[in-house]
Length: 432
Image (cartoon, rainbow, N blue to C red):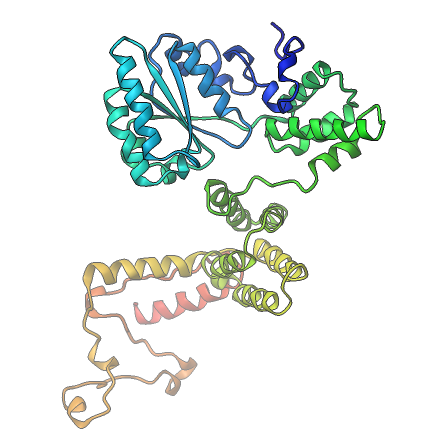
């Protein structure tokens, strides 16, 4: 049978196109060869009747629901599907009771939970005994990182299989085949635009094809063009969940692009997050932290630039507030880098936590009373401004820390070159 040969299925004409185009066998699944190829572990396990409980993790429209159903069919198991949005503990128990009964007659049950990350801990815990005893084989689908969203106890009893977003080439093939079956005249530029802007989501692309063709028919238009694709897609929903895994991925890429001195990538990720609805103040706070952590004294002005961008945004808001944000991002990305101050903070914190509150040297202690002076507080302290170069060869750390060095400026990075030279000279004089 052809991949999408649905012509004889007249009863499905009112079903959405994306639903009609669902693959009917594992061989028809597109873009997930690492899971469904004949030599793939997951497929071999299913066809051998040993399908493991698993979490299918992947972006929207990558085929998680379809894959779960086809795996159940390949394993010759009964297929039950629940939605985490609608089902609760009561529905779980009903499915488990039926599965328990069928199990006694040798029939296996695959229970598919769509959007399993939406279930509470108690709902997920309700599945544990049944999964552990093999009463049901659990297949859970999620767009969120299961490490964060699925209970550790349940996750430990499941394998995690990652579905990849479909490539533009895969999307183009699906759209072209669907258009052929539906007798839709779609120009190559229409298919190209749809494939490029679907974000790897087959369902979104097929829905857009259906919407575009309906609009074209109403306007007596015979061929779908690039403009039709743009109008059908409207404002694209960028793959970016402010509370999910992709949020952390994009934020991480943003920070690492600035750290790697790539202003082009940094501005790209900034725009991507802003256009997806990220809270600008969150990004500005990250920029302030970055200026101190990753640039530090290599360019002391960087922190001021980041803070100024935050204040400018508070003054003007969006959309114009994105302009000072862009200025700050490009400045931070192109500034010389040093994390010496950040490393000094962590090293000092480690000593404080390990050694506790070491005694402050007596010469550094304040002596506002006669008793304190009698006890030797402040005795022998040398006031640097009374000496040449405003420097004295004093040691200020607690005695137990000796000549420990926390701050080591980069002698090759920006303004820290000058700091390193001064500090090297001072340390040589004082043997700090």
